[in-house]
Length: 280
Length: 230
Picture 1: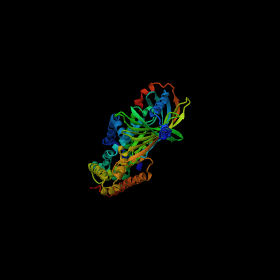
Picture 2: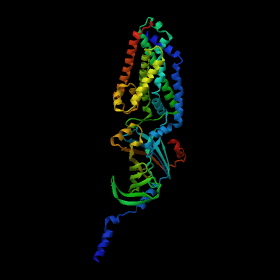
Picture 3: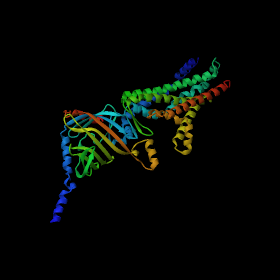
Picture 4: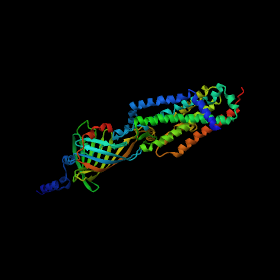
């Protein structure tokens, strides 16, 4: 039953024009970033390696598909939430706007099943957007720029990963990206359950993300103590997959906290939707 | 008369006086020894050991052709020290200089002459170099050099005798100091906060040479795409 419901929800999602905005935006933005990196990428590499160039000869291709994908992943994790909220914020509020709540709820399915199917559909959409990002940045990046070692300026050291040691890190990083963006999706669905118009949930979700990111960015003692409680603090933890050795406890902690947020938003949404008066 | 005899004995009998060597002649012999090599090709393994840089061991092939053609070929990214890489003593003496013999020293059982080299050219990037020269084999065993802007580095060589009878390095250890402030990211910020100013870091690059092919008539074409490969 839930499989059919998710299928229907996905059909609803992919019938809407706004769903494709994210895919089109990534499809345009990432090739533009590829072009920019093609023209200026060497400067970024030179910046990271500037301390070494006085004493050393650097041989090989560091400006490659992996490096470009890493940079793009850094740049887009802040902006992708907006593309996700565009769709997720409409999942419940859209039903209210269209006046289809009553038809939906009077069908022989529980309200929990409705919320579950919407959450799953939202997460599938989020996953497909991240996979599209991975395809455009990594696959196209590798075709255009070729393969090579990945240089990462980490917290303790500059790490140069062998090209045979990179791909699995990207798979896990994109997987983590799907998890962290699913939190954004869940938050948007939660806000979507509170109102009857998608604009409010979109703005609210983005406002929360922007506020949390700004609070995380300020390196002040008071805010530093607040940081562990801001879910945005864990969104960029995919970078841990590009560390050597991997900080597994830190990654596990982030996965648990982000998963906890999804469960929390799902529970809250289910509770609100269960109590929702559809007769008014 | 006795005093005159004593003076002559002291003057010519002192071991230090009798062993004072001509540094220019020593360095010329080193240059001449290396000039016997027209070209060579060698495989090199590179290992970098420095706290702020993690990278896997690498392999590359170095091509050298007289007088200063140089090319590195590597399938992967490699990081090699600029100084001493082609084993040529000319690399340390490619400017007008004044050499001073300092003393004798022993490195791994080999007696060496320690020579300080001061550049006479204002534009030279070298401030001061000290060379430990094995005068038996006419090769440089150790280098300490202070350069702009790298600072001071040390190079320790070990040699092997090739099938054709040339002494060429079997290994090289390049030790250097770098300013952490030249590196981006938190690694620099953390260090600065401890002391209030940027700190120096010591690192090592180990090169192991093998499979020398000397005087094989390397084509100039190998060196033409030098820039493209680097």
